[in-house]
Amino acid sequence: MKKLSASLLVLIMIFALAACTAGEPASEPEPEAAEPVALQIFAAASMTETLNAIKAAYEAENENVELVLTLDSSGTLKTQIEEGAPCDLFISAAQKQMNQLEELNLVDTATRVDLLENKVALVVPEGNPKEIQSYEDLGTDKLSLIALGNSDVPVGQYSEEILTYMGLWDDLNDAKKITFGTNVKEVTSQVKEGTVDCGIVYGTDAAAAGLETVAFPPEGSHSPVVYPAAVMVEAANPEAAKAFLDYLMGDACSAVFEEAGFAIAH
Image: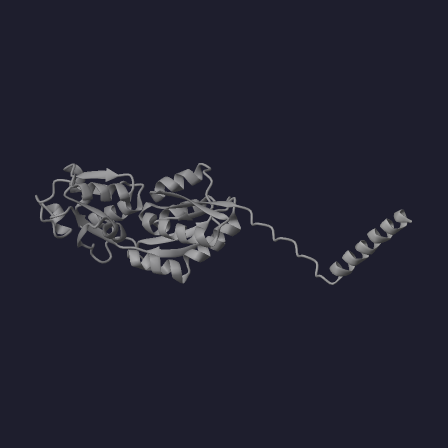
């Protein structure tokens, strides 16, 4: 009898538990966490300050995405991409490097966009010891040494165009009055440290370094300073790269770029 009562009690408990749970909605499965993504961004060195600010904001909003920034001269980055370096998104400081990659079928042309515009500025060290005030002064005895980007650096290419336009390029080279930097930040540092009399950099870099801009080049003296951006054909994370490129074209990023002195090109 005791065994029967115990069995009956167990059955009553089972039925009671079933009755309690029957009316409860089934718990929904936990959503799967998004796969972590390390997005490889290659960008012109002149975007260092803006992209670092954008990186912090984007990663805060997208916890599964890490933006891995490689910042250098566009020519150096182009070569690395050609040699197989992993790159999801490339932002160049000139059309030339992007065009060269496109000719090699390395660019997803459907994603290519002109992102930003910049200016080229003649800058001097604090106090302007040589009293250089214009591009014309570069052809006088005021100048002993000027810092420029080298021929693989877009700002160096713009500088050569300007100085050729003004008839100064050959004379400055012959007189050995030019020292070359491997990217715009190196040129900016030389001016900041006062190791040269002046330099030609982007307006955004001059502002970021607190340098005095004494002149902008004559109108029509150089190619437009446009920054194209595109997802690479061999991107490991093409959808994430496209999403980030869309983000770069949004209002929040436009405000960051404009605050730094860029103009929006798209």
